Length: 506
Ligand code: MV4
Image 1 (spheres, rainbow, N blue to C red):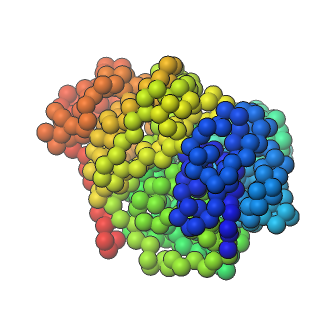
Image 2: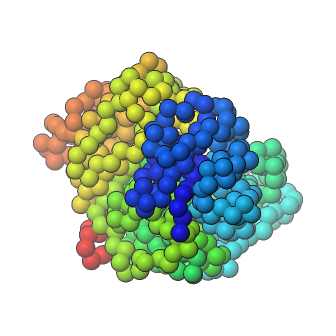
């Protein structure tokens, strides 16, 4: 068993892991960079080690400093959180060599999943559905041209070492293929130090659906249901929810089975996410696997009642999964809003600073995961995630109302500090969002209109009000600048349709 665990991360996920350790009776070692020296996880930990200055390369990404901190404090395990070293197979390998239990998959599996072309090939071999395309990197323009001609346009060229939307180019016209191939390769070489690219059919109007899996080191795995993460801006997720609408119970169950089978077939262990694109008919296509705990894991925790971080640690310690698939019954609906210290009106520019006021929401089925306390300063050196507001309710419409209520309770104030709160409140009133019609491109397209409504909403009171009395969630008149025809209906759209009920038996 693990007696002492070092958390190789910061912010809300460090706090989240520290809490799981406490509840397991595991001692906590925190690491911190200079600007994080007074952070919440440092206070929560049994021991805290300074690992370097603000720059992540010299602190949270510095393998030798992190490993040395673990060895010096007598930790027997390292939890990498997300980002930073979480998907670095060399780091996982070094941990193993130093006798430290790495909370995550085996390094070799992490390496395989880190290459998106390899992951595609392995999942194809496991029988997962893929979009038409290749399972090996494409080396020349001529090869790319003949593949594209075979699978049909539009195609997408993706960096094998990319992922999460980085390093990909959509090609609609054969005339643009050569240029796109060359430039994507150049980007891949420059950004990922690996020029390999692959080609697949581009799917438009799709939803981003990801399945949470958990596998032990004895060959057992379970699916914990899915999350819809289609509301993203330039591949930065803003709002995640579960379950995903538009999936029938049969499609949902099949997706879960495929995800677990795919993970087990490569020897995956720990918590992981299988990412799919889902088209309008509910057909799912494997995209990539994320070999870490994800930011949005609380959505799944609220739907299933499973403490994913606790389970991660227990399977890393070698314990058998106690959870059987039939015991996992996602219930109700959950939504997470990422509260970022950013200014959406200035292109989401980071807007960090001192948090003179930080009043977090509370109340029924309302959770706020944060690494900040009132008076702390959000540093410009790291990501802008201030916290994650997560709610659960019996159905999606109630979850939306609960989220709006909770967003209205959240107060964040400080010199130069801006947040995504008003944007979220506007999003939750958007007819495409309330009706669950949005796809992965929705936000990039609809942002000007959503921002205009966010401005009008900045000081709106808790959920409500005029429209709630009418039974509609669409509180805001559409400004003339919004090009979408559905938004021009003066009375607003129909009341938020509820998804097929997922409670109890389904
Ligand atoms: C795609 C796609 C359409 N067709 N692949 C982006 C994240 C990465 N994991 C996979 N991504 C996509 N892959 C095919 N074959 C659409 C996306 C995608 C996306 C594309 C453009 C703009 C926004 C997007 C948001 C999510 C996913």
